[in-house]
Amino acid sequence: MQQEGRPCNAIRRDGTPCAGQALPSSAMCWAHDPANRERVRQARSAGGHAKSRAARAEKLMPAVLKPVVGYLLRALVDTRDGNLTPQQASAMAAVAGALTRVFSVGMLEERLLTLEAHQETPAGRRTA
Ligand SMILES: [Zn+2]
Image (cartoon, rainbow, N blue to C red; front, side):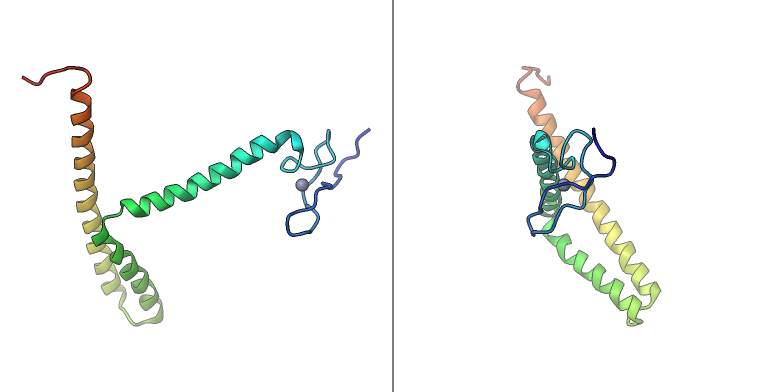
């Protein structure tokens, strides 16, 4: 006999009781039920991967473009505070967009050349 809407019995790491609802077959919620331990671990690890993807994206950004992010963020605040006209901000955004496109095309070309170079050798194909 299970009651509906029982709270989870688990205590969180900060010492407060879990606010989740217990599963019908358990005294704990999905995240705290020992049967789901592995899946919870995988979900947490997937979250970590998302963070490392962001870190990798930042590493891939060409060094010359990194300060541009700072300029754009400052322009955002300056426009809000009235220290930069919306026209000036638009012009900055347009130039930054053009820069980004130039670099993305360059990076894509480089990656494509690398892929093509790797593809030709193992298959033993020869470009006559
Ligand atoms: Zn819980």
